[in-house]
Image 1 (cartoon, helix red, strand yellow):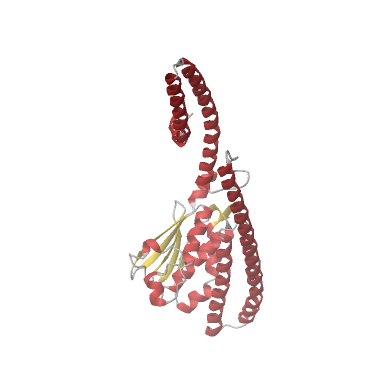
Image 2: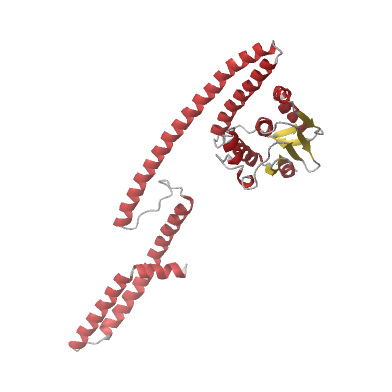
Length: 331
């Protein structure tokens, strides 16, 4: 039995205790005034006190259980009909009824939100699939042409497709239905596939790509990791006008995507993975949405990969992905 809680319970019952003692004093004084034996009051009073003490301990145990249940509810904010303690009085019963009404209201609101969220996911999923049809048609048309204009249109088409994918990633990121499938994949093949999708943009901008990734198996989800790598390549191409973009993998399975672009201001660097943060470059060049690197960080957290950034203004930026974490866990 918790002594501190018991004394708190005694303080809660102090009014009843004071009145009981007052009644004992009144009876004792009355017996003394009439010349009756004082023991006739003392003995029944002690017996009543003993019985009251036993009843108080029993009631305290019930009250302590209710307090513990309420503390757990308060700590986790997980209130349901089954978790609410049974009332031990009229006021407690009224409060419990109010809590039950609030539970029902919260459950109704949650159901409404879930239905709206599911409808929104269904709508954008259908939209993403539908928009792929004209994208595929335009891609087929552009494949029959080989000109600077067709290459530029291919670049813009790739961006549209990437932005459509970003919409789905953003909506599904915290969903329970997120389809992570972990398996061992050759990181060299994944990177080459990502680089290939940006080949037209490399040609148009006249940038060279340095990519010498050894064949290394990493435990990850192919689709989600490829989105991260493609987003990093997209950012590198966006802010690099000359020089090269290099992708490397060291012996500790740290994948680095580096560029020779404009770099990131020191004050902005710690915040580039925050949702909606665009920084000086985003304000100056009007090219950033503040979602790309945020999505990369969230995806890497879900995949168990680390992500960090190094940058020097006017020199370039390097984003590093730690792909070793999941590999170590499975071993």
